[in-house]
Structures are given as structure tokens and as C-alpha cells.
Image (cartoon, rainbow, N blue to C red; front, side):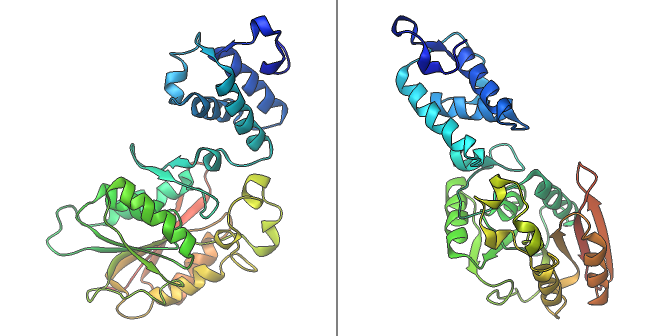
Length: 303
């Protein structure tokens, strides 16, 4: 097979979907991408205007020059280490149908954060609740946590805040596209958020938790494309996490036995748990992600 789909003689210019996909996979493998086939499937499907599953129904279909030209541009962007989610402008999260718009204004939602959402939903009283339940997502970014929680429990009153107006614009657009009602607030942590009279049943946050000195060591897809504001957690990565714990420890923020859920980085769980207990939380638990990393810490407010 030629090195490039454009290199065939004129009488053989058209390639099949199968050939184009295989060439793209091989190109990404040579570049050292760990998920070369998945990346290739996403981009070829995008160029053809179909889903990844539909590719396999089109393997023998010929790809015209216009589609190949579009694909070459997508491949160029990926080889420059731009994340596939930004190239596609979409990222699925947590539930079937929860397809979020993402761009360089927001962090790309990760599967690890789904553990936080699942744990939060497990702890809430069953639906329908006899009394209003309020949930707050701090540092909402694309709105992933808030939207997943509200998508699963339409009876909840959900508020989402972020210090970045650009991030809030993305989150609002996602909520509108999904037909989900969220109250959005621009706020530095809880500074601009008015707690309901009864307090929040749960507060959730995926705050920046990368130590400043480590941001420059991240893979290029993260370091060069995702917003530093959503990555840099200060000298030890926990500056904002501790600030939020302190804010949530104040009277009236959480209901009695209300929960604070925090996504954190590898090696930060014990320090986070210790700070929760030092600030008066009744207990603190840790949950691991699928890689075995202690990823989410839950603090329980006193009764």
C-alpha cells in the first residue's frame, strides 16, 4: 500500500474506507499513540460524517477526494498532539446520550470522574425525595458532573459554578443542548454561591490537582492544549482542594451528614482525608478508580 492515500496513480485514486482506516491506524502507530486504532476510527468516522460503528458497514465504500482532504487535516491536527476530543468537538460522559461539547476552554471529561458521579448518586436519598435536595458542582468546566447528576436524577436542584466565564459558556451550551436545567454561577469556589436555606445535600468538585512543577511534564495533549487554569493545583496540587474543604466546613453549607466529593490525583488521598477530618468532618472515605488509584475522597459532615 502506498505511503499516503494521495499517492496512487490517477486511475486508482479512490481508496475504500477499510484502506483509509488501516493507513490511518498505521500512521498513528508509527507516531506512538497508545490508542492508535480508536483515534483513527474517531477521525475517519468524523471525515465521513458517520459513527464509529457505521464504519464497519462501509468498509468497501470508496472515499472521494473531498473526504480524504478533510481526513488529512484531521490527521495533521492529531499528529500535532491535539486531543481527539478537541478535534471532534465532542466527548461522551457517564451515560448513553450524554454527549458534551468540548473545546480548549474546558478540561476534557475523564472516565475517572464518573466514579465521583456514581458515588454521589449512591449516597442520595432515593427518588422521589420527600424534601428538596440541592447539589453543587464546583469548578464545573464543561458541566460534566452537574449534567450527569441532573440527567440521572431530574428531581434534584443542581447548581454549577466556575471561576472561568469561558468554561461557563461551554457548560451552559451543553445544558441547553441536553435540555437539562442547571443554575450556573460565576464564582471562585463558593465565594459567589448562595447556599440554600437547608444547605447542600452534596458538593462535588474536580478541581485542579496537578502540582505546579509537574504541569510541564504532562503529555503534550494535556500540557499544550487543555487550560492550565483547570490543571495547576499549586505547589502540592491541593491548594484549591483545601480551600474548598475549608469553605464547606462552614456552618450551613452542607446539610447534617451532607457529603463533599473530591476528585484528586495519585498520592493525594491521605492528605485530603486528613484535612477533611481536621476541619471537623465526621468521617472521610476513599474510593479507587479502575486503575487502582485512590481517586475520590468523600467527607461526611457531622449529624
